[in-house]
Length: 558
Image (cartoon, rainbow, N blue to C red; front, side):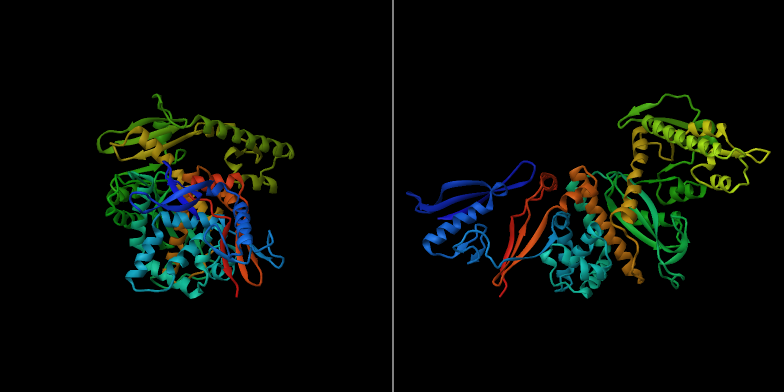
């Protein structure tokens, strides 16, 4: 007689495990042993494990046998004669488990474990470099630390037993291994992700950001850290990070360029690297910062077709011909309105797409009314309204207020109502310019709207979750590999968000409630998870991750 475990795969791909009490009987005809079910205990994830333990205890007490854990672990006298835990069993510590559990599952599902393991085997290496790369990637999504911090502090705060025994030098060696096989890893990862989500990649969204370093001098020739204008407005040694993502916000590939590289100079390299990936129509989509006559010419040569945002307030052709166009809008999904406006003829013909979102227009109008109200209150506090006063100078230099202010000939500050009316023309509008005559109106409008996804990716990379900076590396290959690890973390984050239809912050908060407590006595060490809240269970189901057993591991201490 024995405890039998069976598994069943559901239509959604999830696997459910069941426990049954069974014994073997010989078939009267074939004389082969056949399992006969005596009792069905039910689903493993719904059972009260302690009831099975008490059943084992009672059987062992009557028969005088060694207790065997119902999950296959030999427990010796840990649960002997007396019910409950032994009196000398002590709580050692409690660590986080849920987030690293999900990250490790997605890491394996996207083929990263297999890819790195194959490389390690092919190179004839023995060190656990794949585990080191997992640890460094997972750390970016949990509590970002330096590589030293991952090894010295963070690993002891999470339940990741496969990373026990990692050495600090193995982490740096793993980064160098990743660097040497970067192109292979990125290509395998992209196609594995495309298959996982059944993606048809016909639009590539591309943008760049900067990562600055707290140093006084740039590196010598041929190194990455060069002086440049950071996206935050600083002038400092930096690197340029370029990112290409799908319309779902899944990273396709990333690049690291010297800090003095202009955006247009990155385009040819990006196009060349993606050319062999058998993508669909790789339409280059970027924001208004890339839109200039010289840039458009370079983009047309390097990429062929492009889709670029326009600065509405600074281009006279847009103000006069596009915004004032009386043609009808076509309404698409997500409250998006769009219409095509063609300006010029022949080679001088320019195709614009004017987009409009009524809800966004209302939001911008409300925000402007609030700003104007604050301005009126501030001016009422200063009856003289002298433009030379300190308070007036602060308003005139404020990015928030200056666009609605003007100075009279008498050197008095006033609210310019004509500027307010002019600003209202742009509420809820944005304009796209494209040289692709074959792209539909809807694809063009939705395509640029999707560019907002990449902005969110950069926010996650730099500020909110992954925190790519500060970087503690100065060797170019380590800088580039650090960025690539952050992009791997971004990909895992986006996969989780798409699977759960929730932002990563909410997913992580729910997963953090799954913890593991370490118990220990003179003979045994026991790792036991806590009871799971419903929200955590639902997140695990959305990620198609089985709920872990309550007792994760039992081992002898002596």
